[in-house]
Amino acid sequence: MLTDMHVAVIGGDARQLEVIRKLTELDAKLTLIGFDQLDHGFTGASKAQITEVDFSNIDAIILPVPGTSLEGKIETIFSNETVVLTEEILANTPEHCTIYSGISNAYLDKIINSTDRKLVKLFERDDVAIYNSIPTVEGTIMMVIQHTDITIHGSRVAVLGLGRVGMSVARSFHALGAKVKVGARKTEHVARISEMGLEPFYLSDLEKEVQDIDVCINTVPDLIVTARVISKMPAHTLIIDLASKPGGTDFRYAEKRGVKALLAPGLPGIVAPKTAGQIVANVLANLLSEDLIDRKEI
Image (cartoon, rainbow, N blue to C red; front, side, top):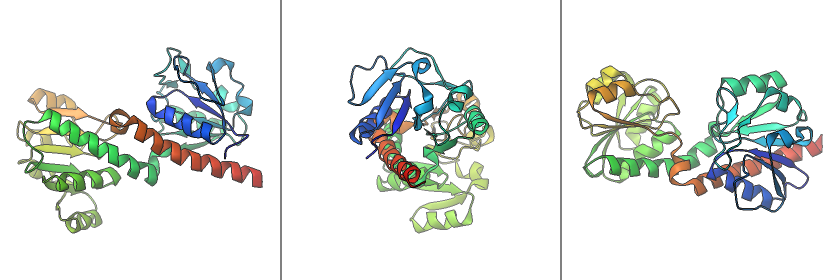
């Protein structure tokens, strides 16, 4: 239980509703910022504007998955209020206050470091990333069906990267009957791809490997699907880039050449916001419980 823990939930989309629901079940005291247009009420949760909150008694701050913008603004789907997380706000929190965000950026890192607070980036955790790969795969399958005129079965698919998402994507498209090849940099990843019964190749050979594909699914957050690579693809190739913004594809050149290229980060929150929210909520509940136990032992 999270009785006596005061948590500020700031902004976000439908995924945050699952977080709020879970934390209220655990008896946490919640202050909701950026939810004034939300009709649903939660027992133990109160809505407030960010200027009205006394952050000196806040034990944890939960930000949306994208965190903040480079100007500190926080996305608020359920409010027209402009919400900005400032250094002054964090400095006013107790020293033990922990900030939870999906990802971070230069702005958030700066104010965290300057105030000496702890930041937990949820999407860098293996458990969150692996669970999230499930709705990501389903969303990717949906996009391929929507944007091609062929079946996945028998199609030629190149998956770039064998990380937590790449592995799930490659396995699922293979199970649907696609002819899947997977590109990686590390020799151990190439070995794993082979063990999975898929066709491995090194990303250094990418230009050669894309010459006969129908779909290219990138999970690598570096610019690897360059103009030279795209120029070697068949004109009908569909590129789906799952890497975080700005992705790993030269979208300008793809458009110029007439190759359809779609940037699709955050698919879990789009195709399955309830499930994606529950994933984050369950991990947050465990982390907050551990934090509360640690503080009581000090």
